[in-house]
Image (tube, rainbow, N blue to C red):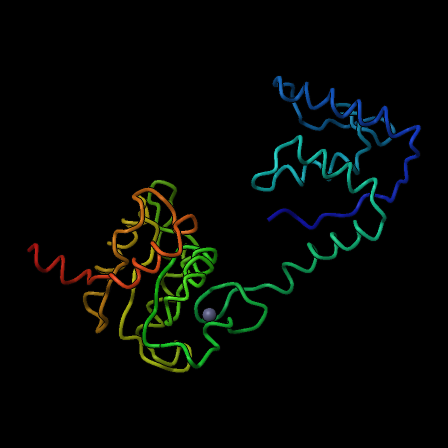
Length: 263
Ligand SMILES: [Zn+2]
């Protein structure tokens, strides 16, 4: 996450100064598209030598351009839009971003995003707390919840195993998953977990993570199932349709049954 952004000074350009600035932005965008360096170099009098923007604007553009899906051109457009907006618009955006890290945290049981100690799902006594579905990211919880087909709890790994990138079990929330399985007191409502559903994305790393988890469950008294293969291989859950996800939940099958049958 980028460090909190600061609103640029509320500069109110007149229409006379605005037009050339937009023209300059366009020609700069064209240059950066053709591969010109967009690095910032120390400027004279608070202006960046590389881009010609005041340093406050340049800094905002750099921060915005680090966000996923925002290229340099979009970042420039957003920054210039904020510059033109009422100062209240920029202040309210800055305070929303500033408040993000303070208010949002991970649920202490399942690591879903929440503003409370427990997320809404873990806190809901109507959910079946004996069933836990393991997913990679909070956005997978959103996708699965949108189906309305699942009434159990989740465990968000916050990633997946990736030995090539040096990501092992302790870099994820896997130790906390074992604590949750081994001690009912660590699960929501103090209910013992009876079934673990592996709901990882059907990618090579997702499959590797599923295999690791199911092997680690062999000595635990928990039924391990995985979502049915309705999901396109290599695809991700967040882009699957609700119907496909609902089928994948309903048609889930036992991991142990399969591996024992093939032995
Ligand atoms: Zn939770």
